[in-house]
Image 1 (cartoon, rainbow, N blue to C red):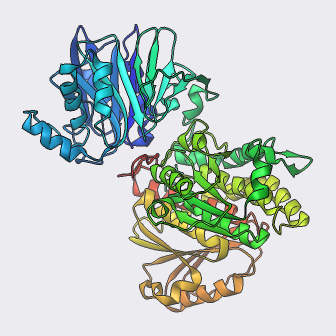
Image 2 (cartoon, rainbow, N blue to C red):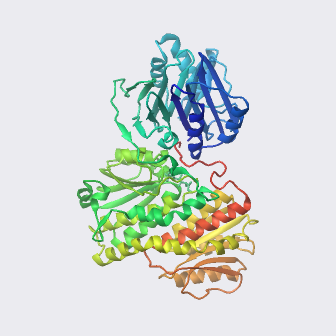
Image 3 (cartoon, helix red, strand yellow):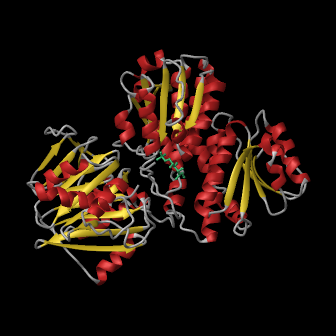
Length: 609
Ligand code: AGP
């Protein structure tokens, strides 16, 4: 993970770098640092903690320069500390910021120690800067030294590099980690994500795998992996600089929960004509691809994986489309057998999740002919590497806990189920029913958001709890999984989800008055089964909290609390039941005083294995 920013301009770049870092904090926030060149001298500041700590340090002891690089870190090699914070420096001249992991760093380090280099950090990154230092001894300039260095690196990297002796060039390169160049007027920038640079430009060049670029004040030269001059197009971003504003909300997460009705309306916008889903929404040759596929394999991580699990119920139940779902980090190493004509569907908010990207590449190696991604970031790697794309259009999601990205993924997956299902056993009637439900969804979510007050009161019972169980059945089991992930992620309460029928096979032993059991209980064909599972909890003195269809009567005796959820149709019900679970986690986390938007040890975009 980690976020990189850099710039070469005719003005002081420090405020630009700091603003960029704040916008990249979702990628990591355990320490931050920057380095600038001023009058052929390298100046560096680093601080443990978030970017605001670095900002305070710079306020107390300012530095300035017209060329510089900066970094916000999510620790991989070496604990969070000032010494491990980037930039890393060699010979007091060269500074490097890095996003990724250098897999052969131990081997490089052994050689460098023998050459007399002193190491001041435990990071894998430090070997890069010493390697550039070495290469500079025999190279014409920094650009050549970096080209030489990257040939020795194994693993993933996006790098920004400066040399105090060459204040007119910023060198950048990428392989396996994202990096964009921001094109200004008489100035150039680099960043891990366009969002970091939106205050200074909306024009971007997306570096390709293996590219090395040299940025000057008035020009940029790019070399591809074969060291040939490469012409990369300049792309205009549609994002506005204030798209990442918190507004009047206390946390991004709360804002993003409340944005869901609008976000889903955006997901559906322009994709139907006369209530019929247009298949060209997935790409110009989508119909042809869908005509050929015989099965679907979904690959994703975390919350996006949960979206895939819900979609499997839809694909198989509603349309009889064979569908498998797997955590991307398992798929990529499992040596799976792929059936012929399987559509590989990746789901990712960021489009940069390393495991998901690698799983897609693995599927292609295994012979997959068709790929589609469901993604929220148009310029991301997954979008670029997939044949078909359906954007979720949730808008920027800043809170590390995914909320609107998840529900828009589900809405988008329903569109995919319709498009693919038409070739299988999805009836015209079911298609119309699903379409009507999708269009009703924003309004239904508005109603569920009215439960906020009741859920906030309910959350008071959780603040002291150590553990929680979440139960669901059918397509609501992945919703229970998502509820448990949200709770543990932001409140640090240990939470697990079970398909309710599994309770008696072990977890029932955990039940006592201190174990809240959160149950998702819509009015569907599995309700009677679920009621029996709830009785099992009640009979053992467990504390039941039931999110239940408003039309139902209480289902168990004893310690039971009920939050009534507006009645909705079966197909969209998993999307609706997600919202109260998001609100529950949010309020519990606020009560516990955790960092809701940037929970400990996590990052928004997981671009390392
Ligand atoms: C969700 O709240 C998480 N932060 C996390 O599980 C996330 O969904 C996962 O890392 C996958 O990210 P992606 O959707 O960007 O690929």
